[in-house]
Image 1 (tube, rainbow, N blue to C red):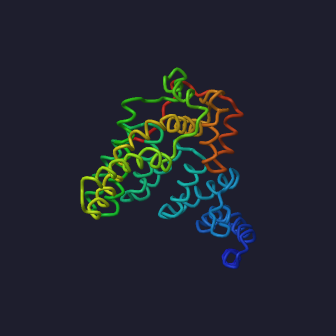
Image 2 (image 1 turned 120 degrees about the vertical axis):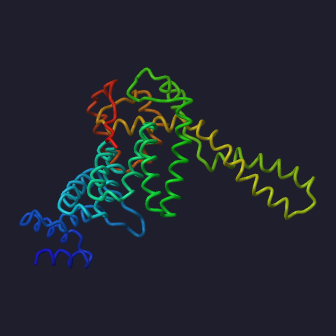
Length: 317
């Protein structure tokens, strides 16, 4: 009856009452999977006027605790696994725990390919490209055994990202746990500047080239229609070819993002003070969620240094 009252309160828009009733349900019956899942959802803030409201660290942590209990009691609750993965990685920055979380989903649903996508994304973010490649190969084998155009397209996109980022890493790698890594010098030199946005890059680099080539085409080709087609083709072609240049220019941002991810994954600091106080660092952190920022602040205050021999714990395939 209390659970029915909780659902009714939620339907009537009284989230606070619904949450209190759900908590009463699990205090009386700790095996009530639906109530635990409801707590995980109702702890998170309600969207306001179409704007997605982000949880703070306390809300995210409480929701994560409840969703852990929900999947323990009901391992087939796919929605709970998704919410847990989003909170753990996106809001709390616990990427290493995120790998373990999605490994748990594999055990509950071996045919689900979502864990592979999520784990590959985490490995790429942290610079573990060899492991990410192994996971990609397994993902391709699974998709081949159960053909699905949507999954094939998604796998193709993530492989493009993997190959693009991996080739860049071969040119210049970065291990945040190594304070003597040369890439720290690159980040330090660019710490006073914000990264170049894709829109700015297109306007200031791609568009002038397209304009010049388009002007030449107008003098050579008599047909206006053909010129328009050529200009459109040149725009997309040059934008695609020049993307690698944009990635190189923004390497300091991507490397610093990796260092911040490593800090939140390990719970220990590795970013030097001069970089932490920089414009680039502030710009990157502002783009993270409120819970992530709060947790990162707690880690910064602890000041415990990241061991140079720190290695990500990657689940075996």
